[in-house]
Amino acid sequence: MASYDLTPRIAPNLDRHLVFPMLEFLQERQLYPDEEILKSKIELLSQTNMVDYAMDIHKSLYHTEDVPQDMMERRAEVVARLKALEEAATPLVNFLQNPSAVQELRADRSYNLQMLQDRHQIGPEQIEALYQYAKFQFECGNYSGAADYLYQYRALCTNSERNLSALWGKLAAEILMQNWDIALEELNRLKEIIDSKSFSSPLNQVQSRIWLMNWSLFIFFNNENGRTQIIDLFNQDKYLNAIQTNAPHLLRYLATAFIVNKRRRPQFKDFIRVVQQEQHAFKDPIIEFLACVYVNYDFDGAQKKMRECEEVIDLE
Image (cartoon, rainbow, N blue to C red; front, side, top):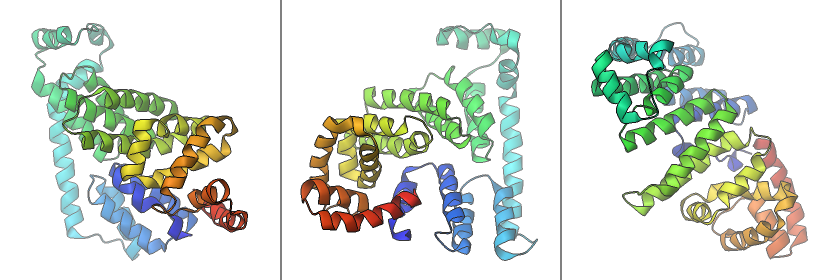
């Protein structure tokens, strides 16, 4: 069954924190040796500030209460950096936590920046500190705090690129907290920006769409209308082109959504043409099943593929 696992294809298109739920799932399903999963977790954690979590996994993996010296040193660095960022962001954080002070803010961003400077001596440095503090909180695994600070930061930020980065972070935090309705709102907001924004190159825009679709799987598979939403997003020409170009693994999810959604028959016929184009380029039981039934009319082959499809569906 591990041969059907798409984690190696999806993970490179995710924030590293979003890979943790996938590793947890694989560990629960015992798809790989437990030791292999634990080592993958430690490797992933080494690129974050979640040092305590990494220490706990190290103890579990090696059955010891001792941890490597580099982990201890890393923990000290994280604590010191967190304290420094907290101090730098404190003036703006205190302002934002004061309801009467927040009432001074208006819809006009330029007015807010000038007001903060004139009345509270809060300038660009403190606003930038809030972003860095929020980002660091996210890396530490404090997703709730990160989401709040990134939301507040976006209301003050005048840099479009940094604002976009904050929105990606906010989306990741909401997914990790399983706030699916809020995450869907952020996903739609991000899609609107990606589709309307001028990118330095078309490849960057394509990559952004691929990231968005991979991240959306968490939301759609936890939403009542998720199968319909997958079709609404993935089957748009620009997004489908991105899938065919650089992310064929996403065809599995689009195919599954079509199979279980009977009301999408007109679009389904168009999708079968995609299946016909991709059946030899991308090997997947569900795609091969559809090719057997709707392209090759090989019903014996379809019956064999059905058993493999059941394994794939069970894996997902």
